[in-house]
Image 1 (cartoon, one colour):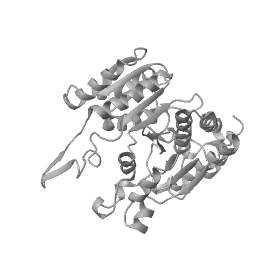
Image 2 (tube, one colour):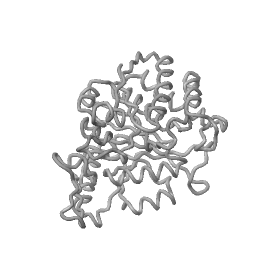
Image 3 (tube, helix red, strand yellow):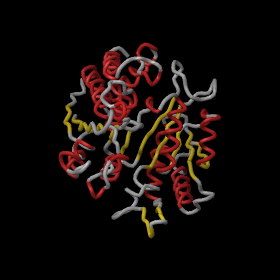
Image 4 (tube, helix red, strand yellow):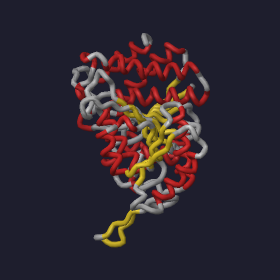
Length: 357
């Protein structure tokens, strides 16, 4: 089984190296027979090839069993016409990685940022290929324009096809959990676009009579995430809303650095941490690799489920469990969550724990 590894920008190379170290430990423990190829994207690719993302890398990635993608410094890239292509968007559109799966949960041994006594265990299913994102909602050109220097317009695209398929993934996931889906929208203002999204979700819900469906305005959802996060199981949302509420949920649960994330199509999965590239701490060995390690664990579990491969399922679960084993020890935490351990040592500790869980 072959993985393509793309370290990218900022702390990306450090946390990707940490996740690969843990994955190699899982490979040894569960005899997965993994191999790894590396390619450059982001600033390294821009310097060498004149673009942050080459089409040949996207084409090559399609031939692998999984993709490990580091963090990107997209805000610092040059304009697209000068080679500054959004790497994450390029993968999502180029490989149709439409399902951005973002879990958020509290841990009893870590302090959360919620009210005392509150807990969280939810997953946000975010549609990732359309919506209010101008770099991915048009077949050609961009979904933003400036008719004059003092006027800017942005176009939002919502389709029945994309809404129905992300809804179906949400209901399928809910069937393995607590059987509840909450559709996040703003249909009281966006009557047509969010109205179409809600219509599509309700249509899919008919195929899952055991799953309870409710819906919630996106602004109200932020309040309920703070006030009563226990009400949520699986949340399904369009691109823009899902991006915002997933960051909120992860930070409430403890830290954005503790939440894994995958981007998946119907037959390919990419692991990418939820957070950004944090260039100010790059190369200092102080980054928290937890999100990246958990993202790779999610990808491994996804492949195991997709191919009915028990070894991959067990390996993914072991990687996730090993992270919790290490985090449960206050002396084994990175500085962003109150510890002193560096990125490399944290990875070594998690890799060692993989064989014991």
